[in-house]
Image (tube, rainbow, N blue to C red; front, side):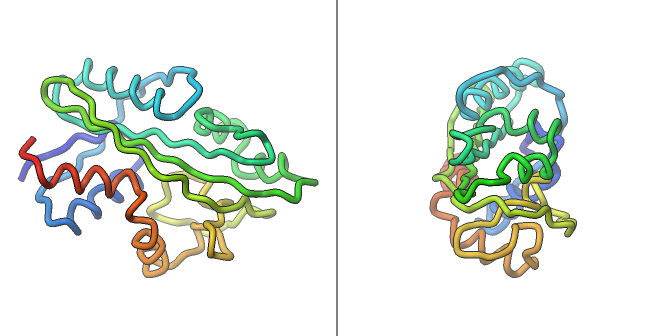
Amino acid sequence: MNKLIFATSNSGKVASLQRYLDSAGVRVEVVGQSLDIIEIQADTALEVARAKATEAYRRLGCRLVVDDSELRIVALNGFPGPYQKAMTEKLGPEGFVRLLQGYDDRRAYFISNLIFVDDSGRQYEFSDDPYWGEIADVVDQTECEDAWGPLWRIFIPSGLDVPISQLSRAEFEAYNRAKDDGDAYRKFVDWYKDRSV
């Protein structure tokens, strides 16, 4: 079976991409590889993902994927945006809840950007449509094995009334199916399965 390197230490992202590929009948094993790439400061997560893809390819010299996501909170003028990872490490989900104390508008959205790099180093970009929701007023304590990060404990997707971390496996899969058309991972898999790369 062919392997596809996913330059990440996030096992939730690796598992998500593997599920998408499996469900599309694409026989590829996704292998996570942590490279500890220093993230550039940029205005968007897409710019960060491009830089990560360039550096990952420079180090590995083979086809691979990278992902960079951002959370934008409306009441905070889009903060933390591409600084989501650093701010989550500093503040934790509790810090985001505290930042929104006194705000009625708790709307926020995630955007994920997946970049595939082929064997020649050419990059192909796949970005989410915004996934809207709101920030909870308390941090959920449920542990979610497929979580991409601790912000799943405070992000309540539109149409739901609990954070992603509280969803059962069946509820989570239904949520993913509902957002599939705009999902960066789905866009990538649909593109990838039609090519012999």
